[in-house]
Length: 283
Image (tube, rainbow, N blue to C red; front, top):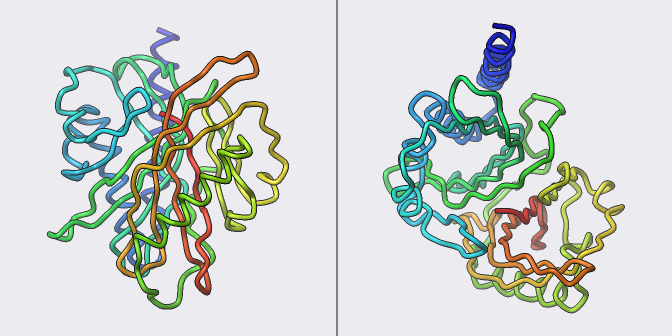
């Protein structure tokens, strides 16, 4: 009975945290992205993770399997039915000036069913894109695992540095920057270069707690070697927000290789310079 009480408290506590996020309101259209995320998470708890992903993923959404980008919608349609529960909450969200792109991120937990304690934890990153009918759909989703429950503030925030006007949208320009950036990374073996990052940024690496803020990432020291292969890019119509993703091989000191994926969200905060606001290497 005590164990059952603890489990109920855990799930009820997470639901209460989600209600707190619901109660928080962000100014402007960004709330639409948050509402879509929260509806996504709620459906996962109420009707199952598979059904929720099929409902909210775009027709050409990107997912990842064994280091390979795949069609996320088709991937979830092929998954067997399960009682497993994936639940999450956004703690940070942002949106493009054209209100066609957005992204959300926050902690998640996984349990075998509604009556079980969570056994897996991590942080997710989701890029949202408004489709032709005006609905927000998931364009790409990637997360990291954590060794223990993710702590920290439950408050919901958005970016401080907001674009003031639309800029010429160019997928080709961001693709060129991404290719140049990954070429430099491959030559050094590093997974990131601080000079390319916004002052308000996040780095996610599986097995580690999120690195948040420019001051924190400047102090990161990496022991592994990273080799990137860009796959694709997309940019908002207002030219101020975009994302890139691809493959990455990670070599440990003992020579072992791990093949996984990466996702970067780029933002033009002022002027014409693209800066990374979110950098994820996970699965």
